[in-house]
Length: 309
Length: 294
Image (cartoon, rainbow over all chains, first blue to last red; front, side, top):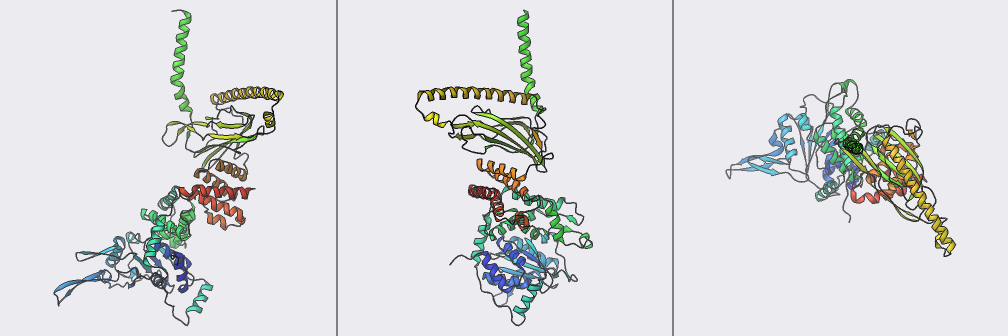
């Protein structure tokens, strides 16, 4: 039997998720590039289903954490509990110890809870008491946010947004996709997905993507794009992307090339992933709203001003 | 001190002054350039005896310049110079200088053409440098005069001898003429005949001609830089703008031609693939480009 490929995973996901090809591809890219993703979109657009399906297709441990204002850091990372019978403390690991963690509505929890999660994302280990515990590998956090209902939410600080490799904007399905949803799910629940790849396969894909070649002009192109976000005179941008964006674009472009069956990246790969890495790292101001254009439109303008190598 | 010895001392001082001042004056007159390509190529690796062919010198610099006056052509002792056409075009990415020399060979055998040289101040470090193009080796094949050499008759041998002497003399004359030409060109940089240089703005070349030239260069010297040059000309041919990627270009109706789409993909690969795959990528690009052009 042939080793499973990322495209097999994409095919499996398309059995449960109607349309949303960009979302599925972005999830795969983040998985291959070993990064965490932030999904933003209105309720009911299969954000949770996509994360759950990905975990099921990978045969990995999946945990969902519903973020609420009364959530505590220990509810995520775990805590030490005193056992009265033995008169000792024992450690209970939190739901973050899973391969795929869905942090649902991450902006509903206060800053200290968000910080606990994001620190774990960065360090890939958590410390409970005096003992450090490594998180499983692969470990991917998929956090969701709802852009429509901002009351009672805690905006993610810029530094913490930066920890996410990619931000995926989940949009409404097309008319034909909506009809397909009606046909498929109106009378039946989603069929459970069988695993098509193992966690070891994911590690193999990551190693393969590290070997994807980035030619020097392409590296310069990535840097030029990131610099353009800082140097642009666009009046809707307050500040540009950090150097983490440069690394994120490079890693995502490598993953994209690998997903397309190439062992070298081309400018199209960079273009395809740039918005994923940039849209949550650029500081937009109120003019974005008054001009009635989305962040993607502004990023498109910035990228278009950078000559393709 | 006699008048003769005074004259000798004056001449020595003058020579010393020229030796000291000459190079610095020349260095001061050099252009500040960032040279990204400097190649010498031929439209055929095996020219035929007495059949004219072309040598192509391509210089690409990042700066926008109006002339390139410190380029020295190789001395073509084995070839007769028939013509010389220069073309200079500038755009946002810099300047492309192309010189096409029409020559003819009067001898069969292998000819090695020395590199062309270009003196300039390297804009990256401010130092005066002499740049060299690649060396070119051609094999001249027998043409109409070949049977004379295979004949055993004394008359034919005599005729060949006379012919050879004439060719050698002609070659020497050519060499002298070239040296004189080069000397005049170096000493007087400005008066390049206006009609000899066709500026891009005055008479734009067909992008397909540039593409053909780039193919010649890529075939002669299969490097990544030349693949990038061919890719640039191909993009110009299909009307790609600076902000368009391959996917954008292929999405346009102008690229419905599958042969052209294949060339675009192959040159994209040659431009960005890893070194171990480069030669295979260039070979594929050259093959598809030849097919698409013809």
